[in-house]
Image 1 (cartoon, rainbow, N blue to C red):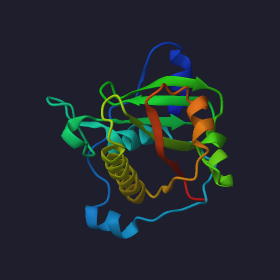
Image 2 (cartoon, rainbow, N blue to C red; image 1 turned 30 degrees about the vertical axis):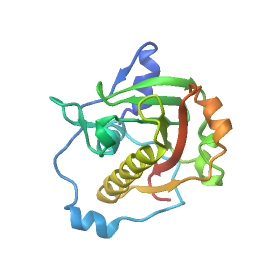
Image 3 (cartoon, rainbow, N blue to C red; image 1 turned 135 degrees about the vertical axis):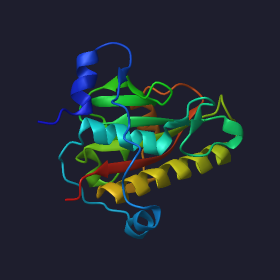
Length: 197
């Protein structure tokens, strides 16, 4: 039986729960992934295995050059001004890319806050891209990074036969409150990920 990432997180109770090392070999060739890339708004409720969550987050915004702290998606002047939050039925977590770990941001099922569409609350995972204006006051740079992160998610999902869609239809004040964001953090977009229905 596969153990979900969330079981590990709940068991950790304090601090960051490390994810398994990402599998960075394999997958579809780039041109095949681009050909398969699409948006989907129909998701199975089946949870994603721990390794899939690990690989997904590393592909999205992970550290691919540890010696420099470089990421899989670009960031203006390497400010890394985007925070990625992971929302599941068990809680909301901040993805700490440097540790490749998830840190609890809020307990409980807040998936319904991740978007206004009906499918959002039942899909197993929603990512939320948040600009940190303390790192860069220019939201244009953060939006470009968030777009690159979203495309990385699309390509990973296309490679692994997962469904995904990026969305901006969000009640941002409600979600900011639910995620307990600090002043200076601004929600940009959200992206739903799961198995196709």
